Picture 1 (cartoon, rainbow, N blue to C red):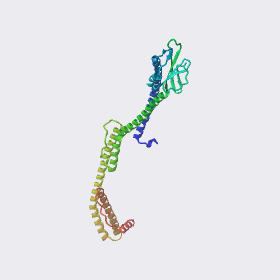
Picture 2 (cartoon, one colour; picture 1 turned 180 degrees about the vertical axis):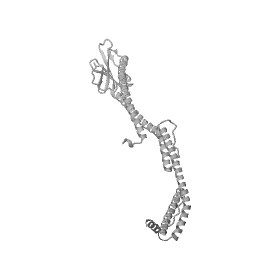
Picture 3 (cartoon, helix red, strand yellow; picture 1 turned 90 degrees about the vertical axis):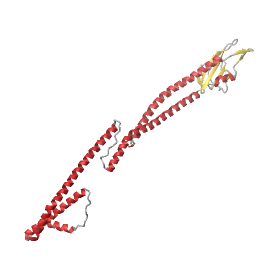
Picture 4 (cartoon, helix red, strand yellow; picture 1 turned 120 degrees about the vertical axis):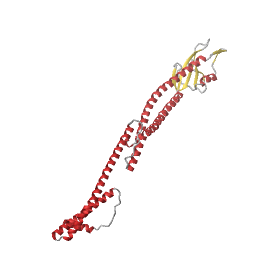
Length: 325
């Protein structure tokens, strides 16, 4: 099945498959390292957010009452990272939350946990005197933000692999087309030589010293050898035609004299001698026809047009019967 596929497509396909394998390996390694880095950065950002919040959270006493941060203040801290902030009492009751904060069923005594699709970091802030105790600060961010970032990274790597494979296929086709150009030129010249039957034509030899150039030089030497052999054959045939023509022409003169003498003997002799003279005359006439045929063939080989004329077949039959008798 693969043998029917053109070579340029096989070369380009092989290049694309190898590129795809390399890019897939690269994407898996880079994707895993990037995912670990993004998760680590996400966790660090959540931890840094809760630490920054606890460091800047101000709790004061006015009129013997604890003044809690306003919701707008919590929204200000939560807005940069689309976070959720909750202030809890020591026993887990909610004191204040940021806007749209969900009711997270968390354990306030666990510093790091994942609940209801959120990563939650919990820290404690001591209450000012004369209050004794702590307030628990929870800073949470949606895990969907992390997954969305990871999906974008995976999608980017997928497009990178597919795009790189497509570019490798196109580049492989272009390189294969360029590499096959000398062979295409050799094929066209070979077809031209076949059509014209002229081995004297030369084939183009590439400048590069590679297998294609060696093939072109071999074909060129083969054509030179065929051209030399054709010239030798034509020269031998020309000499042969010349010899046949000369021999036929030289045989006509003595053969004409023999025919004249045999005709005279056939007319003057009687009995068995007359029959022998007639038989010899018929054989000589046949020889004359053979000589004429040889001369005709020699002239036909050099391109002369043969003269066509009617032929009496009965005379040939009578002559053959006489020879047999």
